[in-house]
Amino acid sequence: MDSMKVIILNGPMGVGKTTVGKYIAEATPGTAFIDGDWCLDLHPFIGNRETKTMAVDNILHMIGNYKKCSECKMIILVWLMDQAWVYDAIIEGIKKLKLEIKSVTLTCSKATLTDRWQNDKVCPWRTDNWLKISTDSLPYFAKLNNTLDTSNLSIKEVAEKIMAAD
Image (cartoon, rainbow, N blue to C red):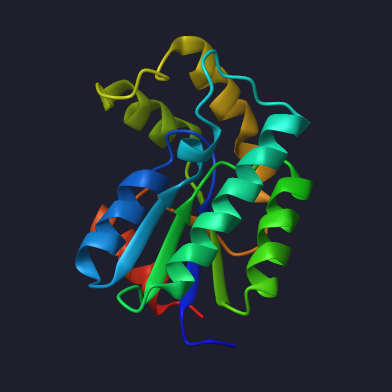
């Protein structure tokens, strides 16, 4: 495989994927940051199989283009992948690009997620309805491989654990 690595951060809404991913990207020269939500930015939002398939294709095209860029040394992909077929399609696409993959699912306690949610004054998705959906998804994400409980960790500590783990 090529030496370029793709780090995938999965997990529920509000767990800190974007915050940690941006922290790693900013601290690591030559790192591209992809937020999967950019690749599915429809108004109004529609998250069905067709639109998610399109988003997967968009993400893989972006990763492929970054692979061609000599300035790019690593890619961070953050996206909520709560359906196995979406995650599997991303993994298979990255494998076809012959890139190294590190995948981590960020989790936290319900209390921590609620606290982070209520303190996020920037994201328009931080409504009570979406909080319930997100907290209800915690058991699904907790069952996935390579989970990292971020409940009592700082952004820097989460980033260090992701970068150190293999």
